[in-house]
Image 1: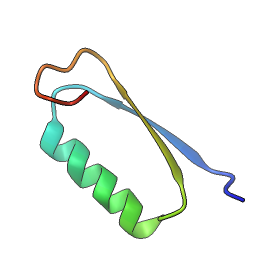
Image 2: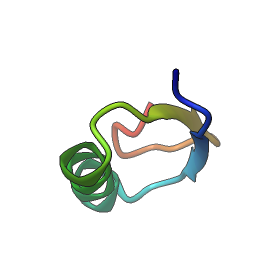
Image 3: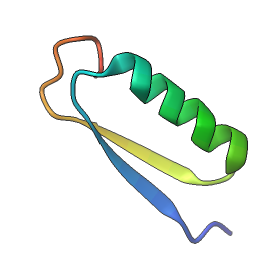
Length: 45
């Protein structure tokens, strides 16, 4: 059972968001990650 969740706010930095996601997955493969987009206009949705 996983006791940690991450809530990550995103806005207009798609490449950084992808890098962040992959880094978290690499280091913590079982952690729950929730991304929330705040009106991004660069595909970060």
